[in-house]
Image (cartoon, rainbow, N blue to C red; front, side, top):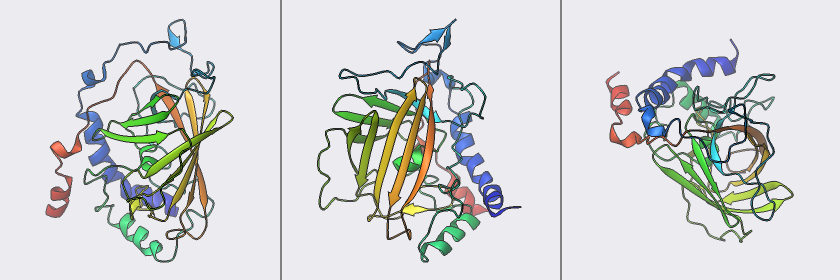
Length: 279
């Protein structure tokens, strides 16, 4: 068994408890099912996921919509429904596509190994704390993008989280107060929205292995809406405290239509940590 498969095998029980409970026990009626998404292009009633990219006034791409990680096998038609919500390949390891994995600084290597071995028991997600935006892209929870000319707001159904990306290219603060989502300023490069983020909290987890970014991190996202139903997000992390060199991952998202966000409040009945103590 490869190291990657071994780690995934260790992590699956945690995924089942946390992700399974949130997806299975949530009443689907909360999603406003069977309410057609306004303006969705359809062919014979079926959403055309390859239709042209929607655009805002001024002809810039409009990222508005509800998104989830896209794991559609190559050659298959991308679903547009809320069924079979998938987690990203990057959920367990943000470095899954890098030949040698993430380039951890020496101090971080044993920490990641320990977090993997103990099934991520101290994971902020398990303890119902907010998910950083990088991690949110890979989890099987819907993200709703609300996009205007001045701001991109990302609503995370998990614990009613949110993120603000100001699209006026405003200068980032010189001395940010560290926060869960950091400070994000964006500008357009053609049809790609380039977002620069600083000021995240130390030890902010970005995957189930316990990889982190720190207050020193500079994160750049390059988001492109390829067509009506697909987003591609190229993420570059430059964090000399946690990594020996900058690294890049490409995250794919698919559009979900005819549905709405679920009310998933983990804190109302969080019992996982106590159960782990008993075991």
